[in-house]
Structures are given as C-alpha cells and as structure tokens.
Image (spheres, rainbow, N blue to C red):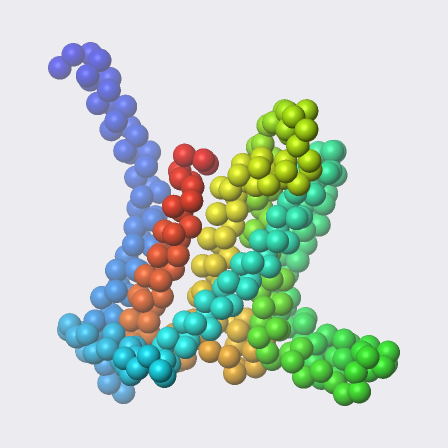
Length: 297
C-alpha cells in the first residue's frame, strides 16, 4: 500500500471514529424507539396485555369505515382537522416570522440592538409552554379581561363565546407558542444575504417591494422551509395545546394517540403514530423539494 493510500485510509477510519458517538446517540434515542413503535404497531392486545405477533388489524381499525366518500370516517376527519390547524398556524407564523425577521435584519442597524430585540423575542420561552398557554384562559374566558372590556365599551351585549375553547383559541395559542420557530431560521438566512445585492437592486431601479420579492424572499427560502418544517411537524403531533385550548372538544391525531395510550391500547396508538409519521414525512419531502437544505446550510 502506498503512503498516500495509507494516509487516506487513516483519515477515513478517523472520520468514522469521530462520527461514531453521534451515530450511537442517534441510533439509541431515535432509530431504536422508532423501530419499537413500528414493531408494536403490528402486535395484538387485549384488556390485560400486549400479544407479540404480526397482524394488520390495528391499521385496519384506523381506516375502518373509510370507504364512504359521502361520509368521511373518523380518521379522515381527524386528519382534516389536524391539517387545517397546521396550515392556519403555518400561514400566520410565516407572515409574522418573516416580518419580524425582516425588521431585525434590515431595519435595525446596530448589532447590539439586534441582539437585544432578538432576546426580547425569546423571553416567552423562559417559561413553560403550559404556563404560556394557560395564560390565555383569564384573558379569553367568558368572564375574562377581553370580554369584560368589550362589554364595558358597549361593543357587545353579551360575552363572546368563541374566544375560548374554540378553533380560534387553539390557533392563537399555537401562534403564540411557535412563532419563534419561524423567526429564528428566517432571520439566520436574512443575515447571510450579501447587502451589496440590495444596493445593486436599488441602483437598477427596483422598488422596495420588487427587491423584497425578487431578492430577499428567494435568498431567505432555506430559512422559510426550515421554519415551516419546525412549525408543521410540531403542530401535527401536538395534543396538549388542542386539549387545553379546545376544551377537550376538538379532535387531532395527536389527541387520538394520547387517548389510546391512556386506555392502554398501545398497538393501536403505535399504528396511528406510524401513519402520522408517514404523513409528516410526505409533507417534509414536499417542502424540501423546493430547496436542497444540505447544500444551503
């Protein structure tokens, strides 16, 4: 073996050894649990125990009565509700996240002030999600501050019922909780944009909107895709926010899985989790077709 070949082999072995710890962590905490969920989804169960084996009954139960187009089954209605929340939260957080990131990146000149304002955006994350979520209850409730203010101003004659325990309150809580997941990657992409490109666009006679649409948005695409993946995947699997802010009256896939596990229906819950994972992976695959994240990062 030549010295160059020996050196190349040594570097290759060294690289594999360096990647081994992270690979082991990834396998133990991600691949193995995922494989166990997939395996349990094919098991049977009764009121007392899990029965190892192979059966498709759990998947058949998930899609039971789904052959009627005129009357969608519970599973399809649940996925429709979950996707609705995901789309609404994604659209709102994208608009807010892009606007805030744009302001921080292009209208705040001082790096120190950018840091201060960015830290202010993270302040809500200093408390738990549950506390931030529950904080909306005394504001939006029937006797909450918002209703009391509307009644006091004479805007309404009776308390507004749909402010709490409704689709509105669920979307509001999601936006409050997860907008930061959209701000951070978009802000990171915008900070990497060469400012000379903006000057060139202005020198070419482009208006502010033209520069935004034709220069900033395309160059921020990676951050937009990453933020979208964060928000959509979190909302798709969430069950706490929908349960609390929806008054336990709104269905979601995550809520169904949570209820099934509480009744010890682990194989059925695992089958639902596998299907949910497949749907989320399809959405991520569709999003990543717009940009090669590996090359952009």
